[in-house]
Length: 219
Image: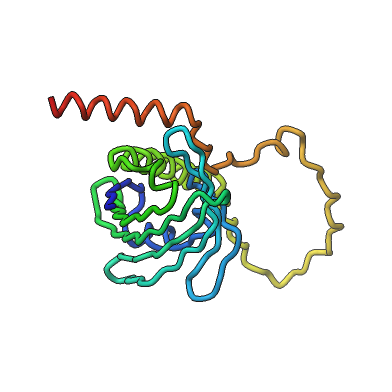
């Protein structure tokens, strides 16, 4: 089953590419994803939780970059996992590519997904899987932008220029006493950018609404 999605990043491609290839950094932005271990040869072990219709699924598995083209900004990822409750397996070949747009970069994601076992029954409708994937990609893009915004807010100010030394040496000053941060300063931490899970009811409502719209378009 082929699923195509895209999202935008407010960075030029040469800056967006290393960010997207930094899996431990961006994994918290994907709803339901949990990175458990970085393996050799661009491989990772993790857990992905997703809801298909009324059923909540949790897949434990691995993902490995089989091809990375840094010049063309393209990559191919192979992932596979098994449902924690033994209801089936999922495997996917995912291709990423970047293209420049006025606002930054558009990321195209093409997924060739295969479901086996009972999970194949839950995700039988291609339209439903497309909608679920688009909702997850949309949440990922929002969380990624929030992460970038948070990092811009905490960029350190440039250090003042060091004055030129003179031939007259001043006596050494006593080191200043340590200053404890005020409660207001201590609480001014950058906002969290980890993705919030999409609620099951919210996701089902969006998928149902999209299905109704497609039905009216066909009629």
